[in-house]
Image (cartoon, rainbow, N blue to C red; front, side):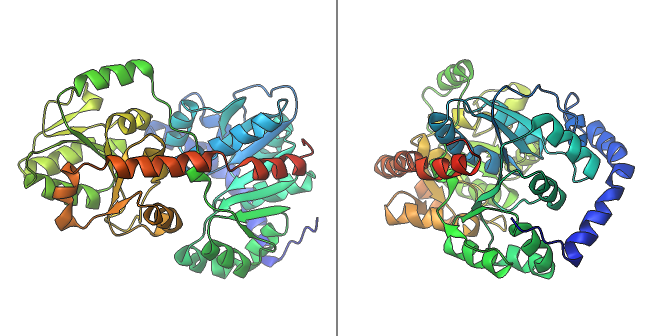
Length: 415
């Protein structure tokens, strides 16, 4: 494989030499603010906290929670085809680590990706010695890519996503991206627009294969938490607002004031620390709330389920889910998580991050776009048939990853 190193990449690699001068103090400040895990923050300095397993290891990386969870189906498909393969998943956010640890696929462990400095990456690669490196979506760390390729470890980029705005932000660094893409033996994209934007940045032979999120297994749920929540919801009509932002909450709170009979709305904020803020906004609308993080049950108009790692519980118990991020600039979150667990999908008008996914759901009559004015009626309607159609699509997608899994295993010499 060619290994170009143009001016932009060379400048970046030179700059990363300075990262160790500030990294430890920066991470300690983040630790003091609760943004890092106390027993694992040194993983970002390349210090592993788990032993390397015996046998060939496949290393997969994604930046955050949604991207990491989307890898589960692909890992399961590779594990089924290669019984000896072990898997390491890296990410960068605390939330992704905590939730993914509760949803580990077969023979898989999680670590944080080291900061992009040469010493940290050498320590990481010396310990884990992967047979293959798989990067997902759009999070590429240039030195990590360069150091991995320099060791002769095959690289693949899967599930790549790059809309027009993301491409515009990266276009000034076209030389750097072209150098990085040249090191990848396989690149697949979620949709034709992403394929076009990747090629415009210098990627060759990009294939459009669809989103891995559709093929991810259902989120898990702790049996005790599920049973307790199910009992607490007896006699209520629960509706879930999932991965919410302030714009989604404002629309929902306004609609709930005029909804009769009023359902019990569960609000699961994208940032669980926003629970008290949401309670304040609800009070301004004359609505009462309880917070799960405070040990309170669903005894008010709204139950703010501001806890990590329990979305599998809420999707199982709520017949209808309103997808967060679809009434504001976030442009939507993953609709396949509720689909996989039989919860009907409602969403607002802004879905650019998952345009192809929502298009597929709409084509099958498996999701319903709603305006703020129509939301009140939609919250109390029966969407059972729509939910069933979405689950059919989700079930079909979960069996579609065998060809990509086989290709990756062959790339890593594990076929």
